[in-house]
Image 1 (spheres, protein in one colour):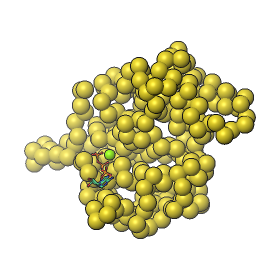
Image 2 (tube, helix red, strand yellow):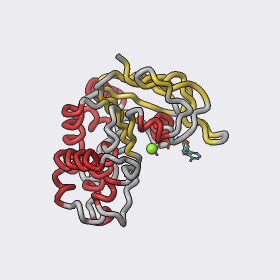
Image 3 (tube, rainbow, N blue to C red):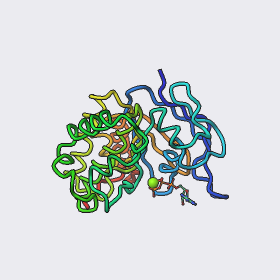
Length: 246
Ligand SMILES: Nc1ncnc2c1ncn2[C@@H]1O[C@H](COP(=O)(O)OP(=O)(O)OP(=O)(O)O)[C@@H](O)[C@H]1O
Ligand SMILES: [Mg+2]
């Protein structure tokens, strides 16, 4: 059963087209990477799916529910969570306060505590640092916190925009190990923007390449990287984004 269906999607900012007649289906439990150059429309695609930006054409469905035109909070309630680029955490609040943001309206205090406990079990480092201010965490810990926060609404589908940004490769390993473990434990479906196609190949999953607001190719991430390597060997050019070391 298809979890997410994006049909003929277009997003524009005034006259600037960011996503153009894009169609994408994601199955239950799948892991899909979106890669492509700067300005390709990757973040705009995620923002449109999560309701953060309006669509100018097309429709988005999840489990048969039409998401197009719904408010982000309503989409979140239907089981979709987004970890935005830049992580969007509150630096002056503690780790635990960050996890509680948005739970103020929930009356089930015990259930909230249990959800937080689950997140601490997935990210023991967050339990250790639960009273530290989020701004004092390392980049990798902040990324973990942002993912933990996205889990607080018990989503079925999580969209993650560039989780590797600004992190050392070893830390990126940890972030992906955790994402893959969460996927296994909770049966999550993941849609991840990842600039490094080598990283996507290593983690494993389907890769969708975007350019100019459209999907230019897609397939198994490892096969696609092999193909790019072959192109490079023959023609000396490649679109492969090498992994940064920062
Ligand atoms: N708020 C905005 N207002 C106007 N134009 C925007 C806005 N956000 C994005 N754009 C434009 O839309 C296009 C797609 O941008 P988007 O951020 O979706 O690309 P991206 O693939 O995520 O790029 P990056 O790799 O740099 O994160 C680009 O031309 C960008 O300049
Ligand atoms: Mg982006």
